[in-house]
Length: 114
Image (cartoon, rainbow, N blue to C red; front, side, top):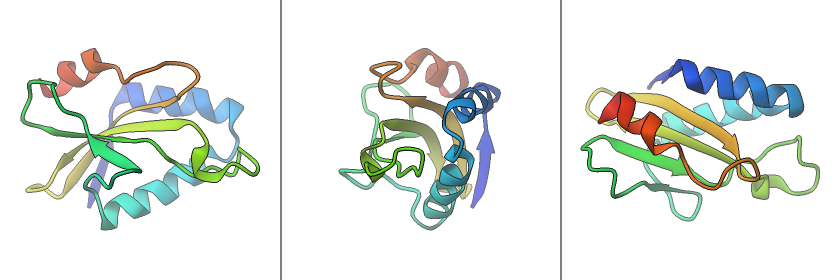
């Protein structure tokens, strides 16, 4: 599985790592899981509908993080990525904490995949 990252995603990750020191390691674990099973797996992740595009865009709602002692997968991180099954490729689009915003940046998704 090829995993690529948008520049905006890298900026999201860099900003969050300053506050959540274990996030880089946590994201590596997420990459390993996605390499094996990249599709949506409710209730942890699901396909974002109503975008008006053919690209399969998935939102991961539950990411385990050691930065949140005792809360595990209820950490509050959200990850948005595009899955291209035929190409065996994933593109990381957005990473944010659920307290910082309510929903994914649909403009960013449409900018690159619309």
